[in-house]
Length: 401
Image (tube, rainbow, N blue to C red; front, side):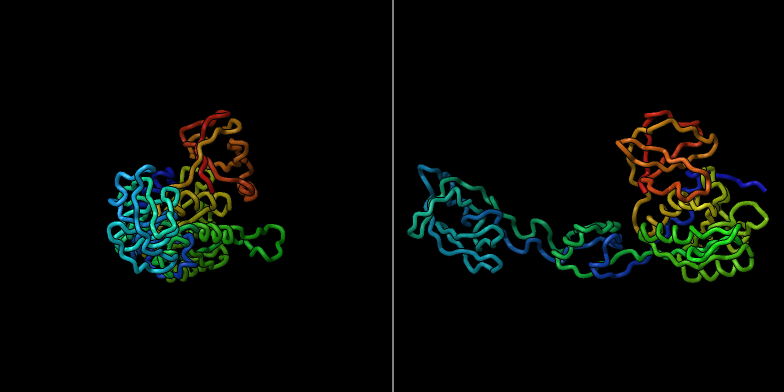
C-alpha cells in the first residue's frame, strides 16, 4: 500500500473546503480573562468619549470670535467669570466678552468654543485678561464624542485582545466582552512503546512527547486541549477512544498509527467512522500525515515522530484553529539571509527549523525523530518541493514559532 501524497498547499485547500466554515460559538468572559482572545462580534461604544468638551491646555475658555484680530499691541479684553475644576461638571455658561479658567483635562463651560493658552493671555489682576493671539473655533480642545460616539465600532470582530486593549476597554467601562469560545481538541497518543513522561522506561520504550507538546501548542494558539491518554496499537481500543473523544471535543488529533505498517490502524478507522480526506503529505518531516472528517469534525492523524507532529500542527492544524476562532491563517514572518547553504530533498517540501542570530537564519539540522532539534529555535523555513536547496546568504522567509 502506497500513500497518495498531496502537497501542503493541496492539503490546506482540502481542509479549508471541508472545515473552513466552522466557527466556535461566542461566550462572555470577564475583561481580565479576555487577553489573547478574539472578539466574537464588533465591539461598540456605549458612551461618548470624551463625554464632555475637554481642554487640552491650561488656559482660558472663551468664544473664539471675541479674540478675532487680537495681538500684543491690541489685546482682546475679556472678563473672567469663574473657573472649571478637574473632575467636576462646569455650571458656567459664557456670554460674549467673558472667559473662564480651565486646567488641562477640565470641562469647558457651555457657550465656549475654544481655549487660549496661558502663554497667550495677560492677567491684569482686576478680573480681566488680555488675549494677545487669536484662536480658531475648536482650538486646544477635544469636543464631546470626538474619539467615540455611542454605537461606533471600537474594535472589529476577530480582533485579538492585547494588553493595551484591556486598558482601553476598562477606561470605556467594559467589565465583560464576548469572545470566541476556545475550541477543544482531543489528543490521543498511540503506540505499544509509549509510556507517560513521569514513568520509568525500559529498553524499547519511549516517553510520550506528543501529548504535552501538542497540548502546549493548542493552548498557545488559544485553543483548549483534552488529553485522552496513551492507546496501545489495538484497533478496537483506539476506535473506542476516538469515539469517546469526539462526543465532547470539536476536533481530534491522534499521533502515531498513520503510516502503512501492519500496526497502523488509523487510516482504516477514519475511513470506517467517517471520510478519509488525505493520507500522505509531500513534506519532510510529516509524510504519513492524514486528515479526515468524522461527524463533520476535523480529525488529524499526525506522525508519532514528535518533530514531524509539531511541524504538521503548525502548517495544517493551527491555521484551521485560527479561522475557527475568527482569526486569519497568516503566520508572522521575517525575511532573512540564510547563514549557510542547505541541500533539499527534491520532491518533498522541506520544513527546516532555524535559529535567528546576528540578522541571519541559522539552519538547525538534526536526525529525524529527535525533538531536541527544535530546542532553542525561533521558527522554520519552507523549502519548496521543486527547489534543490538554498545558497548561502539567499533570502528566506522565516515563519516564527
